[in-house]
Amino acid sequence: MVQDALRPVRLEIRDDSAAHVGHVGGGGKGHFKVLIVSELFSGKSPLQRHRLVHEALDSLLETDIHALVLTTKAPEEMS
Image (cartoon, rainbow, N blue to C red; front, side):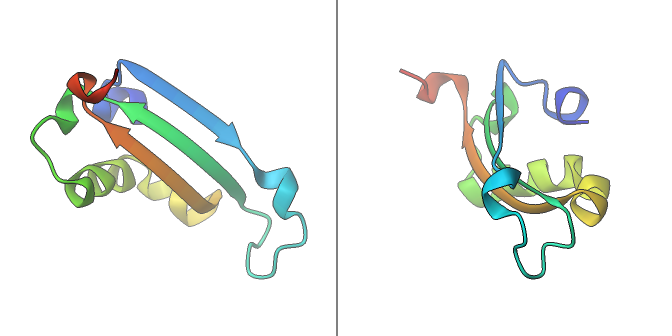
């Protein structure tokens, strides 16, 4: 999904779901922190980048993801 849509040069996913067990409204869905570095983010605003990620994860956001913390960067922003 993300790999195909965004072709990241770096992708890190941290599952923080265990820290939110019993979270009201979570419905058993996961909590994730994600770092995505993609050339597709070059020249795009943070909002545009987040929209691209949300589009790529659309079905998972409905069924499996409750909370998503995104860090989106273009390769030239990595130091």
